[in-house]
Image (tube, rainbow, N blue to C red; front, side):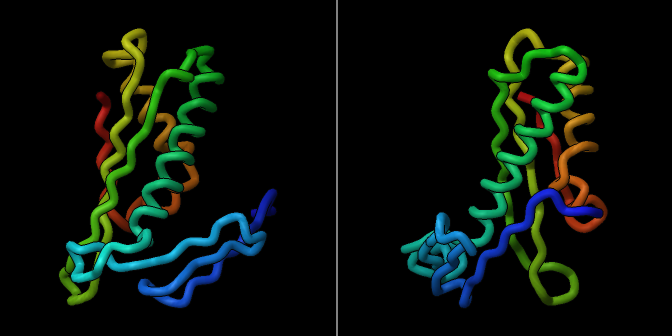
Length: 137
């Protein structure tokens, strides 16, 4: 792959700070209360959810334009869960909730969401690695 864009971010743990190479992202990190932390910062799961939701919404727009369908009123919510896996470590699971406008309800809308899932770089990266559930609302 020839990268069209590359970025970087540096973190010093879940209870520290993360900063992007251009300084535009500079966030305090903290464990969420559900994992024993104080919640006084964001966490990697929130960052992953935000990135995946944005990327998937963009992919939905791209496949919509290709199909000559207006998806500008659609929204995507990514729910990212973390829990113990069978190897004694931790694993992730994602539910993508895609809210489509009334004009895209039904099988045509579902097909568009499936095409976006095949097209989205985040979906490609997670495919076969973590469970991703698509929910069309």
